[in-house]
Image (tube, rainbow, N blue to C red; front, top):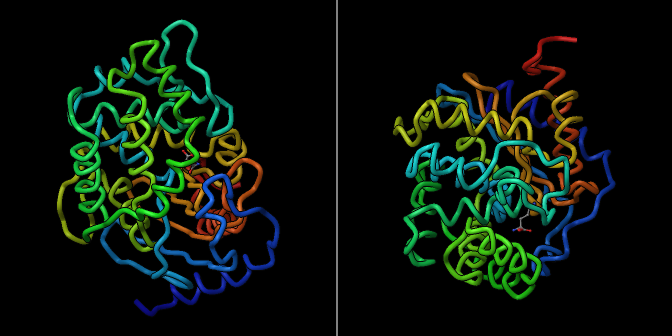
Length: 310
Ligand code: GLN
C-alpha cells in the first residue's frame, strides 16, 4: 500500500543504512551466504492495513522469531499448567544459546532461549508425535498467522542440523531432567525445522499484528490464538525476547519483541500494531544492528514506549 506511512518507513530504512556494524551469523553456514545489504521493514495495524518497504519480498528463515509462536501453539494446545511445568517465564539474562536449567526445577528459564524452545516444541502434538507431525502442526499455525502457506528452507535446516552438537547437548540435558521424553535427535530436528520456516517482513508484521490484536489475524479475520495466550506470550517476549539485551531494549524501545539470527526482528504494540524488520548483520547479542536502530527510531517518533513518553 503506497501512502505517507510507506514514505516514512522508506525514510527510516534509508537512515538505518548509516549503521554499518555487525556480523552475519556464520555458525549455521548457509546463513553466511546472505547479502548483508538486504534491508526491509513492514508494519501491520490491528485493523489489517499492511505497509512494507525495501526488500519486503525477500524470504529468510524465521529462526528464533518462531519461539513466541511455538510457545503460543503449545499454550493453546496443552494449556498453561502443562506448559509452565516444563518451561519457566523468567528472563535468564544470558545469551540465546545459554545451556543451563533452573537448579531447583530442572526447567529451562524461559521459552525464548534455545533450550526453552527445544522443550516447548516437544509439547506440540503430544508426547508420541513424530517429527513430521509436530512440524506440520507448527507450519499450519504459522501459515494461519501469516495468512498464506509457508514452507521450510531445506538447505537452512540441513545446514543447522549438520552443526547441531550444541543443541543436541541441550536436548540430552532436557531428557535427563525429564522435560523431554523423545530422542534428542527428534527433539533437535523438530526445533531446527521450526527455525527454518521461510518468511518475509510482511509475513512477520502480520504475525506480530495477530499477537497485538489478541489472536485474531487482522487480514483474514481468523482467530488463531486466544486473548489470554497472546497476553502471556507478549509478556514473556517483553522480558526475555531480546536475550541479554532485553533490559536495555525495554528501556530504549519499550515494546515486546523477538529477534532471529537470520536478521529478522519483530515487535508488537499491544492493541495497535505489529512491526518487522530484516537486515542480516547482528550485534554481539545476536540482534539485527539495523533492525534495532529502526525500532529505536520508530519507538521515539511514534511514542510507542509502553511506559509512556520521555
Ligand atoms: N536456530 C537457531 C539456533 O538454534 C536460532 C537462534 C536464533 O535465532 N537466535 O541457534
